[in-house]
Length: 349
Ligand code: SF4
Image 1 (cartoon, rainbow, N blue to C red):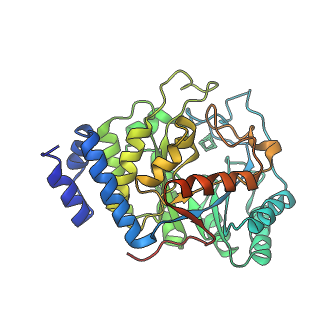
Image 2: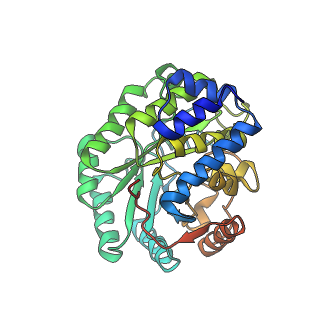
């Protein structure tokens, strides 16, 4: 512990460590370092965001995907995956319901489904913006061309989530088939930032072959890239994928990394993910207490939720949207935080 204290102090003051120092902070962690980091992260978060937690209404628009990421339940190589695609009218209905429940950000997430081409998406974005002008729209639809990202931005998309998955090229290649490229993923992230999106990157904690050195590289990448958002959650295997037999990641390490991320970038928008809540009944509460400040309740129609199966045993697939929102509001209240009706843009530090 004592040897890590100067690192925690440096991180809190300078918001930066070397990759070797991040690695030491990870490998040398124990209950004391975790609790110290958690306290610092919570203090920093409260100084910017108080005890508020932002909500994003997640709409899973398609379970079709042309990619074959080894960890993902809806990869194209999984013949058992159930496929569906929401029609634009159904997506608008989800937004309408979400708006009445107090959501002011809609996240349209899906596999890389060519049916959602630029014409369809731009029409949909314009319609959402026309009907809900005070709402932000986040897209999470994978890799597209720079031109496509530009058109979607012009049509009203404000934010884009594209997890980098790992900042180490070799590790990226262990998680993805040959036709996917680490360089291309990075190009997409930098293009999104240049175009003017609020950008979210992120990674799984405990993904197969991941080492502490890889995680340190992820932290260094985030420190330098400075995204507006960062989604991290524990890896959870899906039985019908090549990684079906691998072990899940840990809630403890995910929360530890959330605290570090809050100290790296104090105003970062950090979700306490559904994957955290899947591995531990109080996982999302622990995430918030460790420094996260966003939750993403599901607004997808209940009839399709089980089909958007990225990993096994995903929670919140049976409840109505209102139930999901109320459940999360109660969970946050119980640990001293509160959900707010707000677009939830990053605040200045
Ligand atoms: S992680 Fe995304 S891109 Fe990869 S297979 Fe799953 S939905 Fe497709």
